[in-house]
Length: 195
Image 1 (cartoon, rainbow, N blue to C red):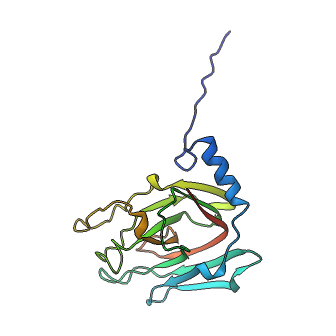
Image 2 (cartoon, one colour; image 1 turned 180 degrees about the vertical axis):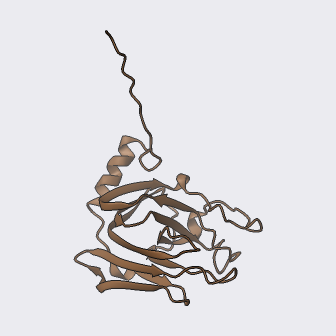
Image 3 (cartoon, helix red, strand yellow; image 1 turned 30 degrees about the horizontal axis):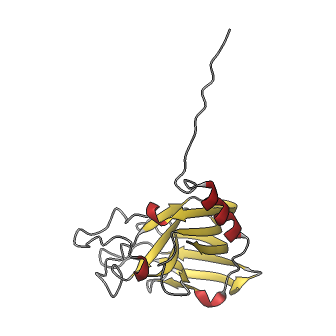
């Protein structure tokens, strides 16, 4: 009796790139050491906490633990973020971000763009992309075309698109619910910007 088999191909947006782009991504993962002067972290003034090793970068990698408190009220939200300040304060010549990381929660990668920040409309509804929980080291390349603004973006925040010249930093944020807060550990081994 013949039983036909059916194969399924699953395409992930993280990996939806040409083999040449994927090769550049993998090469970047092995040649992009972290520079401490480009990294920092921030938390809200409402009681969220952060812990690191003796320094933010130790043994050529970042290890950081966040404890985020629940949202305070309708006007005051809590937040925690690991921040990578772009060396040239722009993404102008780049189309892909490579990240080698571990994270105990889904990881939201945000493009800090001045049009939506404190010098813009103050919505902070930056373009973002969510990477999955990663308990072992994993390398992901994200095309800028796959980023989108969050569902909670206020209607009064005009979408200007990603203006690469206006992006000065990349925020790595554990995906914790506003209402409950929570804890997360993020580790980063490499990050690279790829044309």
